[in-house]
Amino acid sequence: MLEPFATSGTFCLDAEAINMLKIYIARHGQNEDNANGILNGHRDMPLTDLGVKQAHELADGIKAAGLTFDAVYTSLLSRASRTAEIVCETLELDKPVVMDSLIERDFGVMSGELASDIERLCAPDIVKTDTITYFLSPPGAETFPDLLVRACRALEQIHTEHSKGSILLATHGDFGKMLYASYYDLPWQDMLTMFHFGNCELLLLAEGANPNEPHVVKIEQHNH
Image (cartoon, rainbow, N blue to C red; front, side):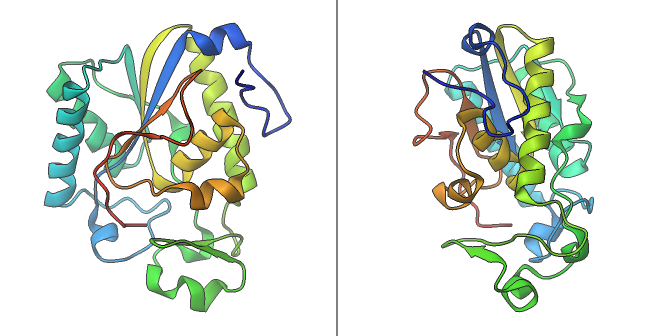
């Protein structure tokens, strides 16, 4: 039986409420910073042409899977909000609602740096995977434990506002992974290396789902 939101140690939701609601997490399409190998964080560069194409591929994948959503929430950053708008337009859904807590991790002093410089600037305080090198705690950055707390609060808000049905959250790579970790009570360290969350891929949070099979739509891209 799933024990939701135990990671933060702050609150847990009623299991009956969890069982009634499915939450889907989409990462945004490629944006200009992604294409240039620059670390985004709270920077707000628009989608590239490829990013727009990916958003349409995500929408088509959602349609092919026979999914629809009772509500769509998005980060305020344009790479996520434009991705959500394309999905809503394709599926003929109401416009996405901005949810401030879905914003990407604050990268602190690493915002605007080259992803290729992470190891040089942040080692040994890093976690390396086959596709991404994660920095853990440079000055001014949210840590992954910080993100877990924010993710728990975001999920609590969603479950307070929706008791059943299906919800889509358009968000970002680091924060999306912490939403996943929070829901399934996975250690954040394991979450970083468990799978890659590519641009416009779709993950499922649902009672009874297998956390080891996360992808509903897979459009693998290796952008940070």
